[in-house]
Length: 228
Ligand code: 6PG
Image (cartoon, rainbow, N blue to C red; front, side, top):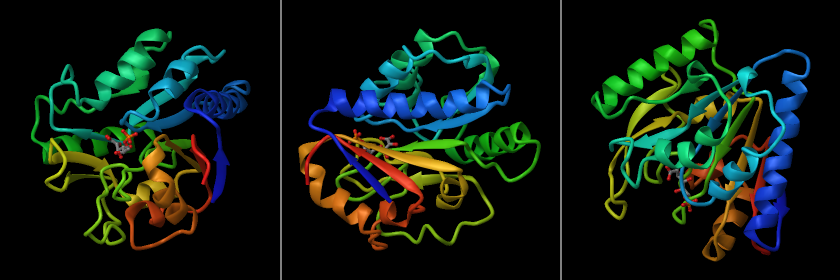
């Protein structure tokens, strides 16, 4: 696990955008598609806005979502809404390159099954290995919609599943990438903002397996806007 610490959110977001655009260009400059999955939350908003300003051939980038709440796309808690506002609406990307969940028209389990099918097809029915997955970190140690109190290592067959957030969260009904899928990606970055997260970031860095984020493949980089 690599930890990059920054004095403020702007510096962190700039660095995460530079890191990501460099990775994307490495593929696209040789004509290869780059596959990226994005998380919601408040921490990555500025990062996505800055990524939108990078010199990137978006026609060669496929964008997926890591997780979502069972809400309409215009709901204030919709991850798609945030990602669309910060990034998708500002870049020139073909609609077919954006894999959104269609969660407003299906039940979460149907949606997970449909999305899983679409993702597998887009990876030509081989196990989907994303080039980059962007993750966040909750104050309770959750990442994606993988919450404490469940054994996330068991699910090996499915790549997207229904999840339930604990009661302190507003929208319990969620859909999430599985730990197995996240850990098979080529690279992962955590984009984490917030003064109260020092202790939790340390636990992720120490690979504390009692929290979901501590189970993430250690071949990952943490971008954090605070000093430990
Ligand atoms: C979401 C996420 C979730 C998030 C963390 C951190 O949909 O909210 O995917 O895992 O990354 O809860 O959220 P903040 O960045 O808002 O602290």
